[in-house]
Image (cartoon, rainbow, N blue to C red; front, side, top):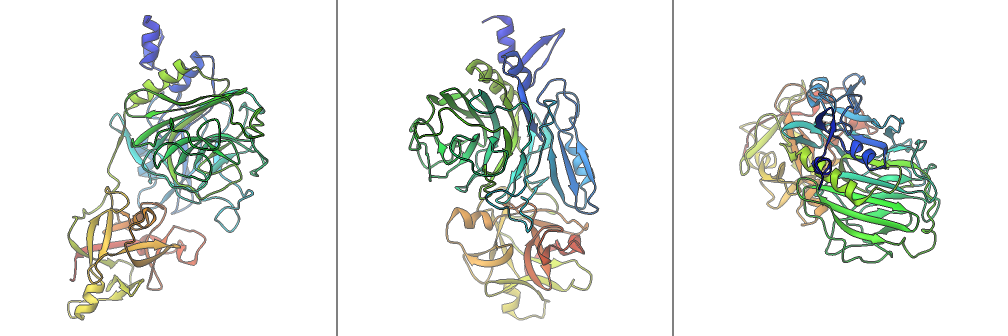
Length: 501
């Protein structure tokens, strides 16, 4: 191997002095330049120092733009933390670093209408997916069902049967079987316009169309009206279930040729899971790609999926395996790692706690339950034993993510606080993945400066909130009555003390 080849394999290029190359520098060197480059965690070109993403805070609806700490560097998470202190923040724009203006914004209504009253998709919490890159904090894009980003007027993306490549860095533990957690090429109308009108990376364990080996999740391709793991809409035993926390997912396609590749994004090299002819059902050869860009949703705005996105690109032309291998080396060198999902006063697994409201006029009320209904009730040392038990909770490791917590009832063993239709309920643990995720919550410092605010792990825009003495999983200024912005910071902040029981 030549010196230059060795340098490229390490993710470096010689430009007078040796500097770290970004993924898009490597694609350009390989003759397949990026036409879209999205990341909330870092710059994807060595010289890029522009906008990575925009956040909007809930306190006054103002926005700020997050940039790298230096050219080619990691996002300035401290700037976001400062801007969003004592309030909530949403990711409103994910900027395109390629210079083509292919920014991703809130996805509009499509053939499958979005969750909001106006059909537009939800925006992601700015704090739902914290990570570090070589020890520097950054934030990914945590997509809950109903969340999505899109650009229906992209420039330079592949259309028709033209060749393209793409990769995305994802959280291999955050997925479901909903349709469809995608990143890539889709319809410009937000409608299902037929077979072959999409070419996007899919990640999840949906089994309606194609599957891989094991029980999933899998990297597949969403080509519209089918998630494909290989030549047919059936099973490809060569497409493995993913087990790594950070995943590199690769899809590329050209005239009657396409491939799926994947790897652990924190170590190792890419493997090829499929490389061959286009799928055999009609409509996929030749392809009829339209060139829009989607993140977190299907081509018709299907919004049932969940996942986490850290970075990804789309290219002009069919990248070589060698170029992608160099990009994977660069990704590994970026040093993705996990970081704490919680902050504020610490909780101890196994302890008994009670949660007191901090809103003026309600400070004698504690989070409690009456049957399955979660509410607040006035509790004191002289209250009945039954009421003390109803207002006491045993802290457990998070059922859906052990980095956060679940709260088991002291008087109803095996039942936990969970969100359901954005209400808080007390339900028995049924052992399902859905229940475990619905019953997992991540405490952070109280938004009003007191105690803790307790947000949902699976819907990180939503917090424990008391409203008219009933408990909800509420967002700041959302569409429901209980999402009202007035007194939000107070209503979602709780002082945690030793349990009454």
